Image (cartoon, rainbow over the protein chains, first blue to last red):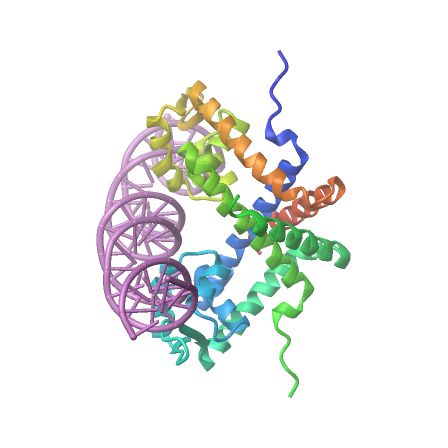
Length: 152
Length: 152
DNA sequence: TGTTATATGTTCAAGATTGAACTAAATTCG
DNA sequence: CGAATTTAGTTCAATCTTGAACATATAACA
């Protein structure tokens, strides 16, 4: 007669669901705030990563974004067409295309990052500096943990 | 000459990026683990929410999932066709369709939730019970904070 | 060297997701 | 009551995302 223990009764499950929910909410708000800049979320993610790591290859970018390479093959031409991104050949490895922002792309990306930073700052204000640091610490530990097993 | 302060220099920004990354990684792993059950991530989310709140309407479900109503209109017929979900008319409000799991749907959903719980348990093992509870607390505070402004 | 295996990027078609326009039912309020 | 507004759900076309098959380039190694 004992009722099954549902996962929502388990603290780790319930707490992780809260992480997922918070993240989804932030993505939704961020998407809405980027629209006025003419940027989709996916485009912003691409630009932000190129800004952070100029010269990275499409493959490296795909791994950072956790998307397939084909996804970038579909999206990058548009960013190039708009004059925000350049794909430069690498003389040392003629397979790869190294990604760089143009001046205009850099300007736009910094504006978009500012919007993103505002959203994040604003919603994290309810956390103290120390609590915020703990969140980062915990999440990096979780990400490291996950990297260990992808294949198990 | 002073270099611009990039958002990655800001603790709140950097720490939130860690949240996003961890969440994305978990979603990817979970998606792979659910495939053997014949379930997509989106389908699992639907089933799990019906399991948690039987009898909820499509609109309520859409709000919980942060997706559009049309999304559910596209996905539910398939879940119904497979005999996992029933959409029952509500005599008190003939607009709504209340969602319920069938016996088979319940069985499948519990199996899928078990998979999800295993993934979560496993990756959260690097956090102590107390740290895990803190994560949940912080994230719920963030979600509450966000609910306040959606429109600002 | 030459053959095989790996790695990068593209294409294309299938599947998923979205938003706007729509129908029908319920609610508001003059 | 009855017209106007709001709400629930559907449809459909446009957009996004994915994975498999492919072409080309590099690496490994016999």
